[in-house]
Image 1 (cartoon, rainbow, N blue to C red):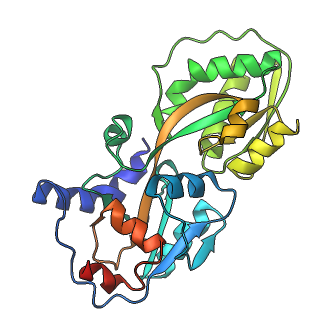
Image 2: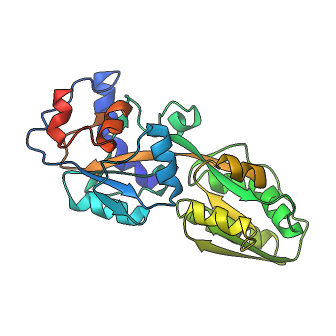
Length: 280
């Protein structure tokens, strides 16, 4: 995983080590204000997976973040804020921290072993019939590309030698902003292996990417959420890697950990203020 995220997790990891099995008693939250609950925009794969994994209707949402960067900026700006982002997209910040959930922080090991409660997978979705260059690229991702995947999230298999068939053509990929940095690097490396190919990437969100591939506007869709039943009937999928959704708060917040149940209640509007968590 990216080395620049290590400092971000240092303090909560140290505190969890001291307590042995995680924080069991919440700190005094009487100085915290109303909950500023932030969700991602409709169509976001991170939003869909978060709500599915937490089992929330997100009716307690007060603000909407249009992107990962927007989410981080909003949490940085408000001490009472809580939000969530793709773990692989986190950057070092002096104003935000990652909360442990049920005693577990998102790390390469907890994600790989699925011990972190908000673990999710990254998909590429595509129709039954693919061009030669699309097939060659997908084979690259399953083999040599897994080494690059490991820079962004947990790879799903070991990296292997790749020999391109030198297919010619343009490959168009649309979808998830969480997956985009990883996909852009994979595309650049693949084009070195196969100079006959050109890959165009358009960043939107998971749902838009899936809709685009269903309507033949692109060849592959990046999705950071699992496909819906009707989408699975129409499209094939390949898992690129495994990631997690990190729950983030401002560094002025004294919390280091929450239970998944408490996160559900926050997003379900069962709590109005941070102090309400002390009344559980």
